[in-house]
Length: 501
Image 1 (cartoon, rainbow, N blue to C red):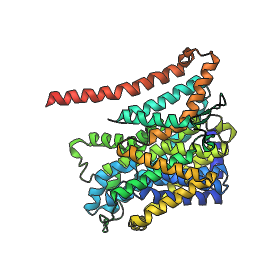
Image 2 (tube, rainbow, N blue to C red):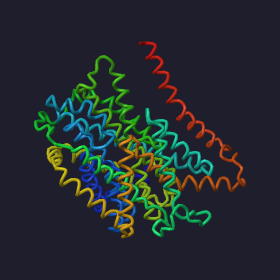
Image 3 (tube, rainbow, N blue to C red):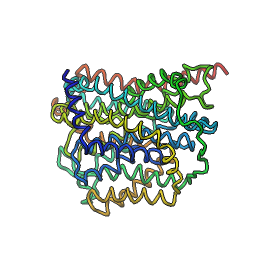
Image 4 (cartoon, one colour):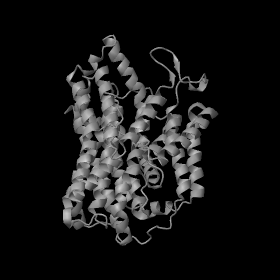
């Protein structure tokens, strides 16, 4: 009953006129950002974060805005994936496999509408899971001390390296770079300046917004200029604009399964929507077997990854709010937004600031409904925006990014550093190095170091404390399995394939 009461109070916060307008505006902006090739939820949230702070929005309103943008981006990524065969964000990659063939077959409207519906179901399943399990996780997390938090963060990095497919070393490299960047500035324990090169601008460390905008927005712009996106592949004739009951029934259980899997994967720190969509697409393809036409325009191949995308986005809020560990790169950015308001996410947040937490949860229900209502009738309008030429799109992104970075400290040094990070991010991405582990490493680095030092200070440097509690032992064990098991499974599959050949 307490949970229900808290949720009702949350709806009281979410349904105020200001927060309702902010949620609708965030959902619209997120959808537009998500559908534009080269952008994604991290970029949308990173750009709006300093704007929300500059407008002096209350913390709960700012968080509602950023959450609506995040969810809107997951909705919007499917539009360009289906119409242009260009995913709006990484999570929509799997949607292109069957979405674009459906569009070429004159079923673009069906693909767009069923993807919007499955995105809605995924978001609602994730939010319901949040309501049911987040308080339990919060109470359980009260048992966490410095050693447990350190083990938890090791587990987060293990998830990154273990779930990155055939490139775990590149993910590990990105995480190490992020950890290294986190060490720049004043050491909070000793008061010593580290790796600042006697530059006063680095005395407080590298600013979070500079890293995010540089590595994501600027590097994306450079990639866009290189790839020369064109809109010549636009599907103009969408035929039937809505799915029918037979198609709904055909995709229903796959959507529900994918939503549950997406939520679980989203809860895992470092996993994210890309992994969730790939897992669910493969799962549904295996379930369908010979009866499926996956890769040729199977409607289940559109519904499953889109449900997983949005469920994963909702699930990533669980570790962020309950444990203070970001579940994705985007929630890592949102943790930076909370830091701007001097709010520390974690189990105490549920008791210290219940209006913020439950207002956010309630707003996620509201945002999902708004996104469904918004996306289906406005498909034609959104499609026309994809015709924006690069000569207009690229300067627009750079202008907004520059304003966002400059507004934090009003120094040209931050702008220079943003450009440097943009070039570095571009070079890393050209080599296939993922950016999400880097930003997670940067966000978690300081927390990881502080918890390690606190744990060791309790025992005067005795490492045994890191493995004392059952929680620590469990997290270390799972972390080892996350690193060891995936390579072994890949090796086994290769051997079986070699024997079959």
